[in-house]
Image (tube, rainbow over all chains, first blue to last red; front, side, top):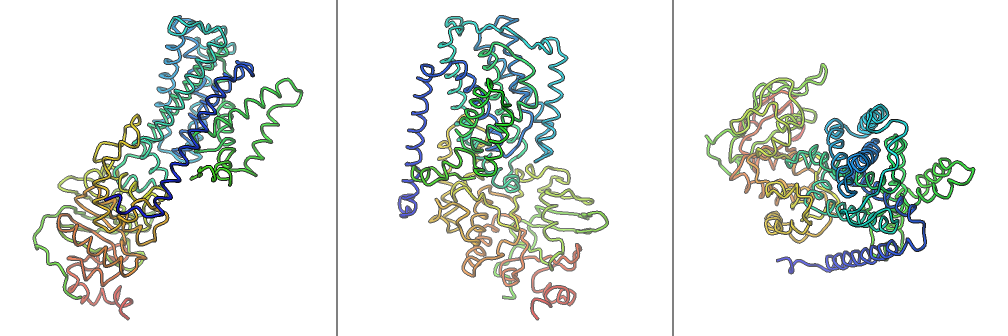
Length: 333
Length: 260
């Protein structure tokens, strides 16, 4: 039956979607190849930092871009997981992969708690509740014993992956981080392109209609929130191993703001946009760290330019550009 | 036109009923003490001038609004305090006055979205989208039934207004509801689509109850077995179309304007 109704237009659409997936595949393979050889050209710690923040931004975008919820409390999951992982590895002597998994689980639990409270609110109310809860968590971390207050957990050993591979060798650590990053991206991609993801999409398109079809909208949003929190935790746990410390900076509200900035810069609702946003912000921070000029002013200016000139973000604008469309990309939002 | 085209069994089962349904917004009563019985295998029309409270009644029945007073019973269960998504899962499915499609999904995906829940394919975040392909057969069947199969791959936003409403009905039918609430299904439709949708409604009402808000009186007289007239939130008259349309109060309140 389906063959009989294929019109020329539909054939063109089919060809277009094939072109899109080919372009995407080429794009991704090239990116992956670059990341494989990158340690030969760049300082590994910088690259690892970049990958951690890229994953964090993508996790955040899973919520903002695909559910339309603007959380102002994602530092809780990132920083919380950093503490959990650091504690497990340093105090309990867990192997790094188990430590990271604990961070993910902890972030998911925090996400569930915050989500249950906030999920029925919308827009600015949702943002405010998440901000308030994350400030509460910040003070918990400041006061609590296991986080060691102002000092943070220092000198976290990287340990041996599966008890075998020595992660204090920075090349080993880099490829471990890269592997986790790729796994995280695959999880996000699958999540978006799944039966669950379809329902999320329909909720974003028309929430009342989704309700009238019998979907409990709040539960699906909560699912996305917990998934986003868990992946942010993956990034945070990883980061504490890379830098070998977990401090209050990771749970502070500025961190929540930074990840919003990265996502907006890269392109909301694009799978890979936040990677570029994170790359830009982290690079700026790195190169300006040594100059006398305050970094925040530069990132602030960059952010303003982005909002004024290219609202769709770097990747969003690229998809919408003539060149992007020629390659078969299309930005739908 | 005066006779309903389909005579329905007089004493079919009441599937949805409301007693003393009231909704106040501050001092203003949008709906006042409305009793309603919707019967199985019947098309029941809710008519009345603009602002009579028809859509509010819909929102109350489907629990998108919480009634201030009164009770609602669906298939023998009290749903006065039930959440709207739960009500939908119990078999009471509505459409909206403003077309409710998922604009950036294809026609096929719109219907598949509705089919996902009854087929337990809505929470799996680890499966690929292609796992939904097994819903295609049923989705195409529904699209064929409403005459939308040729547009199966069209993005819903690109459909004409009337075709969007048709898609909405197909999506609603995908849930195989016991009671169907249609809010002005014919509004903004061309004559051809009106005939088409009238036939669809007549067809689906053979096995389920349909309650519809409708302004087009020739449609009402054509396909509806029972008519309730609302005015300023209260029931003004009730009965079959012939009776109601002869009621002098109704003529002055509503039809007078229409037929003048």
